[in-house]
Length: 172
Image 1 (cartoon, rainbow, N blue to C red):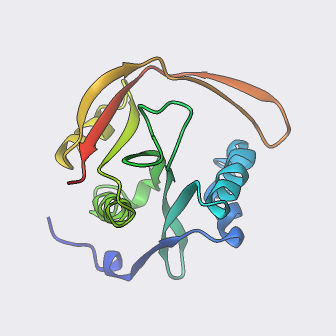
Image 2: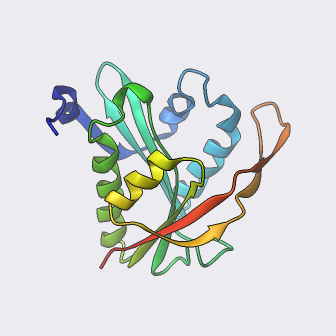
Image 3: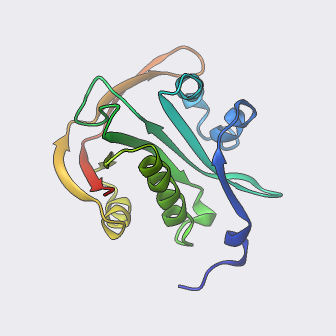
């Protein structure tokens, strides 16, 4: 694959509070505003982190959330296993190598934090994402019901039912 010229200009960095509106991608993801604020607070408390791919003159074109511990220890136990979610690259920047670069950056950060493995859930319908994760060393380890809920930016609760596969990768 020939690297796109813009890819070398992308800076992968931890999100700052001022980045939160940009995570909504011009309103497309506004319904996750409260969720983003909660994850950012968890990051401030050392329980999570938000990585962004920032392209000068354009803004945030990729994002990924990492949870260090969870009530579901099979996802993240706070010691050896972390959980990746909310992994997104904006459409025009997909299939360019950015997703792989962002994922590798997150994995290296987790290794530096002494995590041995990482898990994520991917929709059973999202075959392209499944192929992406397999190419990057992840394998399916369990079926996930994919049921969760969130409060949108207006305070309305939404129930999500998106059956998924739990995938895992060893970082050692």
